[in-house]
Image 1 (cartoon, helix red, strand yellow):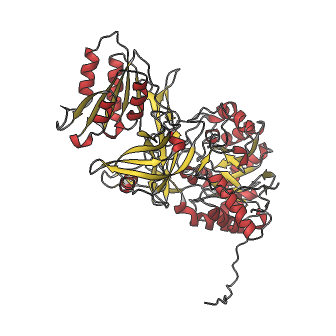
Image 2: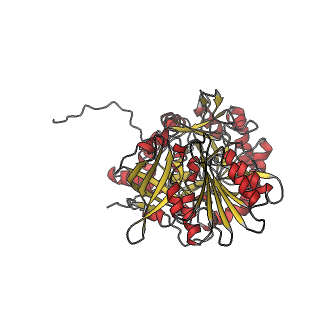
Image 3: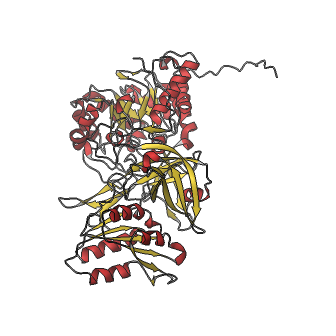
Length: 297
Length: 316
């Protein structure tokens, strides 16, 4: 058999199976974009927002989906890193041109992303994963964010506000220097409730404190949907509150991820099965968004 | 302009459209990647290792990165052979994939039973015997680390299936070529190597292992030179084809394995980093063949030149 392969050297590689509707996995079109860093804004000594020119992803991504970013150039670090898409940037005609990532410097990969200069090119694979399911009025949306877990809520809040949903953001961090974009959410018409563990901004304590009060005081007849993203103990606390007050919740989990496409089976989380029992589900394709009551905490 | 080159390979009774195969354990059941790569353009898809029954696998953490590599201990989470046949095979057939089913048993009887079941399934091109998974205690590796065990499992499977039988060898032995010979003597159609190298990583701050299973298997570019050496040794030791793998991340890496003696190669970890790697490696191999006037990929296999180097006259 003779085979000829054309050299693939486009700006991005588009998947070959647009027409296939059977594929239950992630997006139908996953692209790998060589994305140029168009801005890198340092928010503090540890946090930055990095903007990546990736129109093919920016125009397709849904709130809660993520991208896999190849932060290194050689083989160390070897694997890509998963990041929630934070914002979608648009040009003057309203076309989506870039995505931003909210990054916190903690390890090798995030340190590289913190330092990255404008003009640098990084491969970005996406959009990936199961997105949030946005609600419609009269359901109210309560977003619960812990630290860098704020990331998926910018696009979710935009979507919800476009639908005229009443949105409240419960946002907690260690200190005032860990809270960002509060004005941005307020300009969108989002009510914000802030907490810090050291009391430097908002209420002192964990974000679940005002959340629990709100759950207790709200009219039983008022439907709400809780969305949560942050450290896993926070997600667990939110899911428990949701169950106690008999309210639905959607949580976005973060696990160590190797590939983002379901190939490596590293990012599993224990999920309840319909017929009883539980099993490990790959959070890259089964999530990262799950119903709070699906997960075995 | 790229001249047409012949990339087709014959591994005993198994014919592949090209020599680039997705490695077991790194490509799910293949269908996960159908949105990214046309499965029919791959030489083959070695699906994730299957037992007779479903397996839960190890709890997280299951992977940890190391310099130029990663260590995994997934623990062979899987849906079992029956669900695989029911839920995955139809789509793999529809998409034209050449399916190598990787099978794993705790006992000899389980390997035999798996081979029997899969022999009747339309679209299964070959059986890859997982006798080398370093991450589970109860099977596989106990056959793969003993010469009589390797001979026993290969000949038992050989007796019950007309499908090509390809044992996947572990590098965690002193003399891997002896295991290739044992497999050949027992009737294997080819051997594939290497599986991962036993490894571990410790968080020095907490003094805890990074993986829940404590130990795991190292893969990625870090292992490539050792894998090339092992493929070379096996090529010298057996007449059956050798399928090479271990840290291949580019066409150049693949070509190194062909020269060392691999008739086909598998890509694993690099697919995690770049799921679009397949077309790039295939076009890179074709480009190399054109540049070196090699018409058929089989003409490149085992062509290592170990003659004394001639002095080159170079004008400065």
